[in-house]
Image 1 (cartoon, rainbow, N blue to C red):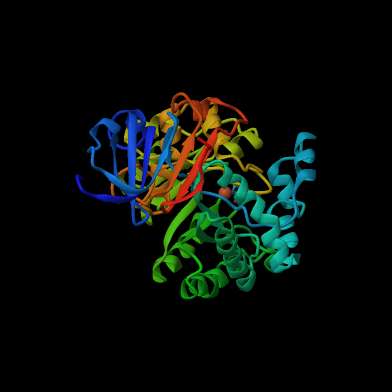
Image 2: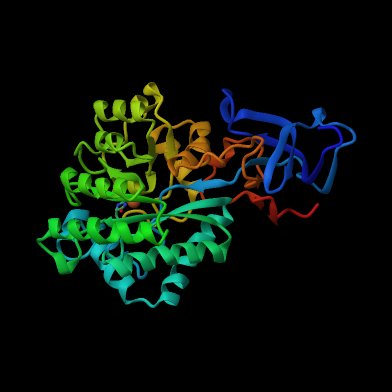
Length: 410
Ligand code: DI6
Ligand code: FE
């Protein structure tokens, strides 16, 4: 390192590198150097050579530095809201009752289709900005509220647009198999034909989707229909993810594993065999405590089985207007610990390194050489504090791709 010149040197930071065996890969009194938008060096400040040179040096003032957070499961591009359904559920209506009565996902489809491009972006941008304010530097956004070819593509385009407008690196997922749209009522298989024949190829051809997802549930699509969507994804060179086993065990986890999915998400009712299949495939389990909480689900996901089998667990907001109207990933860390019994270190790994893997990204999620220099700086005394607080935002600084977006005054 002697004689090296860096673009940016951050000193006086405790590092949660999220590497190595120790919880959070902690390096106290650390420093981190950036060159060309990537981390060039991270380690104890005392190990920095005396003649190190940097174009710019920032002092972290003893705060904690983590990788920029990754929200790996959101549906944040939509119009309208479903507060009245929240009220109806409190009166005893179930999520399934509401969907059958024309509400639920299709209510948001109507509002989203009716919005202009600018209205859709304007409704969605603050949700992404709220995530960004908590140190999220990468977010996944799904379609699924268009449910027609052009409407789905527009949602993906809007996701990319709000990403560019807020500076968050957005990964898009085509979730055309989210619900049966009104034009196809009673003809789910015909709709899946359209998804496979037209929507998946169009999204792949236009480079608008990084992955394909499906809602495989008793109130969504069957495993057979999901299988057809996944085969189309594979034929078009796209990786898959799956909404699996949220409300019942439909064998979703095993199906995701069979298609080498990047992630299987929810998993409250996943079986032991399903978890074993995820472990074998290396598929990430994405835990979504916001939906679990909002639906007042009785059964938490089998976290102990996942841990025992070494399945990587991510934590995400599932930001959507129906079952998880959540724009705080930090709150999800807290709920993942309180409701699902993750350790704080597991929860933080779930919103950094494992969340990146759930998106197929291995260039971020840790503070290690060659990783993208996406960083969050925190006013906390120890990493567990990120999961401990409820409704606080201790984010004090943000660096994205080596660019300093926000930094505290000295
Ligand atoms: N993700 C989803 O896609 C559905 N549940 C979930 O966790 C619900 C989306 C909605 O109701 O709009
Ligand atoms: Fe979801």
